[in-house]
Amino acid sequence: MNATPSRGARLAWEQLWAIVWKDLRAELRTRQAWMSMGLFALLTLVVFNFAFDLRVQDQRAVGPGALWVSFLFASVLGLARNITMEQDRGPMDRLMALPVDRSVVYLAKVIGNVLVISAVEMVALPVFAALYNLPVLTLPIIPITLLGTIGVAAIGAQYAALAANTRARELLTPLLIFPLITPVVIGAVRATEALFSPVYGDAPWLGLLAAFDVIVLSISAVTFQFVVEE
Amino acid sequence: MQTVIHSPGERRLADIQRRAPVIGAALRWLRRYGEWALLVLTAAGMMLTIWASFVYAPTELVEGPIQRIFYAHVPLAWNSYVAFFFTLAGSALYLWRRDERWDSFARVNAEIGLVFTTLTLMSGSFWGRGFQGAWWWWDARLTTSLLMWFIYAGYLALRSYTGRTAQGARAAAVVGILGFIVTPINYLSVQWWNTLHPQPILELGAQAKLPGSMVAALMISLVSFTLLYALLLIEAYKLERTQALVARLRAEAELLEAEPE
Image (cartoon, rainbow over the protein chains, first blue to last red):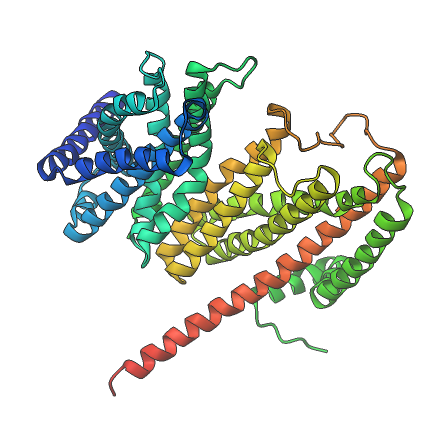
């Protein structure tokens, strides 16, 4: 089938987008996941406001953390639901029956998750900027959010698939995901903070985020085959 | 006397003894008494460590006696790195070779590493309370240590939920590989960020920043704790293999019982 390496690569590319498109259509058709994820993200932002009794001077300190915790919670909620749906209806088994490389399936899952989470973030970010009075709607927020989201989706897709086969997947998924995602959250929060109160000589958070994403993505792409193996 | 040859290991040993009698005899002795020798060595090393860190090493001028925690804290942290590295290695080898023994090796290393990390966090916390006045502060070294703790606690939680299945072992191996990412970050954190945690005292190739007696006490402690780690590893591994065997025999027995005439 793979006559030349370039042809194999093109095939993988086509398979990748076919899976992404399939997942997205399923997502758009049900509309449940991203609606509830978005609502949950907004709700978290509001709850934070009451929990910390935010005054103007506190908003700068608490804001970025609140933003990323709300993104994180909404993402994990969406990921857990996604996996539950796949387990109940069985598209994952059918996907595994296809002659598609497992790392392609993994990358497709990550891209699908990034797209859905990004849609939620596009709604939540302006609301956050308005509720917390913080000037975050600038151009640099795009790479920060994208890199943070890739990190969350990369770890999330792997661990959600991994916990899916266990008895307590709802409990195990966050238990496994949160500690490993924390470096991503720290990097994203610091980079967001630097948008409106830059720290001189601070660590290059964006570079660290990118490096972390690349490491997680490559290890996961190689090991995903062992997770979904029957 | 003719020995009965029953296992591949025994056969290999007999083969070595035929060709090199001295080495073969040494190996046979190690096989029979090695664990006891290690136990005796570890016990003696621990006694020596207590003496070295409380009597032999001088009291630090600025920090006072609380600094002596250092002689337990550093070796514990060092051995937890070693254990987590072996969890990574065991996990990768299991996925590659599909030999259940590598899986057991990875698992017992995670267990020991978690215990050592717990003790590292506790001893560090006591030191912080005594010297800095706070049980905990959120700097990069302490935060990543805590993350390591949560990652391997999650690893063991996953293992207990999946039971002894091949699928569970593969899932755990992936967690054992991915989870290791935080360990080098933890190790390098004191150099990357300005932490309240002290900088490393001993670096390879660099001049030691301590008086010789303190270095000697630390070295004695480092060797003893590494012996303790090795002893725990051997005992935990044997226990783990026995448990796996019991689980397999029980499953076979149930299968036999369930079978009709």
